[in-house]
Amino acid sequence: MCRRACLVAGSAALLLAPHAEAADGDWSAVAESKFFYTNDVFVFSAARRLAVHEDPTQPTKVEINKPQDVVWEPALEVTRKFTSGQWPTEVSFKTQGFVYTDHPIFNHGTYRVQVRQALAPDTALVLRYRYSPNLFLGPNNERRSGQRLVEDERVTSHVWRAMLEHRLNQDWELTLVSRFGLRFFNEAFAERDLHFWTLGSEVHYRMMPRLTFTLSYLYERGLADGRNQPPFNDDTSYRNNFASLGTAIRVADPLTLVLTYTYQINNFTSAFAADTNRGRKDDTQQGIAEFRYALTDRALLMLGVQRTQRDSNQASAAFQDTNTWIGGQYQF
Image (cartoon, rainbow, N blue to C red):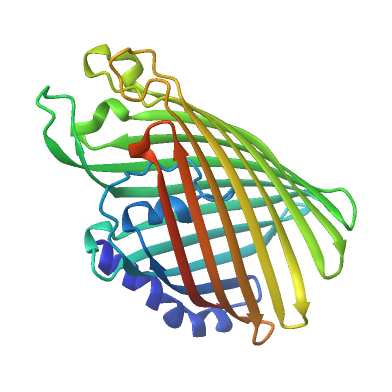
């Protein structure tokens, strides 16, 4: 089912191209396709979403075996711009797929709806909803039956985001970020259902025409149903601090190098003495380097590498993951 949806998302860009050009200038579309090599399919999705505008606290399952794979990531975003009253409005829909070559059980898609409303020439409000259904995390020992049976663990996420963007001057831009989310697990792991809220900010600084910096910070609190269900000893509630520093360097007119460093601390807050999550602390670091080459003002090629390392005071929660990719983007 997901494989079919992902294939449709990728091919839809070609089908929409003539329609996007035939419509009036208020319609636009961006089609993107990337091919990844990953050395750990279990943590690939969480590593890819460890970013301020993605879902940096997406759950992940760490396994001893680390199967490798090639993953196709097609995406399509369609935007409609119009003016309602004094200031312009943008409404967009984005669909994104992840198709695994040798491990199709991990195939999944995400869907995003966004409204961007200008409030003044230098200020805008952005409202976004992201839906990520039935994501497979891996086999795990359930606790609800009391028999510690091995079951597939899956999660569905609903995330609402609000951002207030304000350009201070031609070089500085400030964004205030807030999120609220719900995560629902399959029945065998229902005590892990949780809600979370996030507050943070992002600052963009253009030091010179060829060099820009971005600094981001998020604080998040997650509260799981398990905190009120002592018999299961499985409270995955947490406090999370996320920070990232990025820079974009225009090496030459068609070539840009984007570098990003991310650091995240996740502290689990379970109070149950028999809970393996009690006292757990995860520290995650990630580095990304991506070259972007502009073939035209609409076509872009990308080549990148991403290295993620999580250390934990519980050895079973630590992992290292490396992803490399090549891809392209076209704006209609």
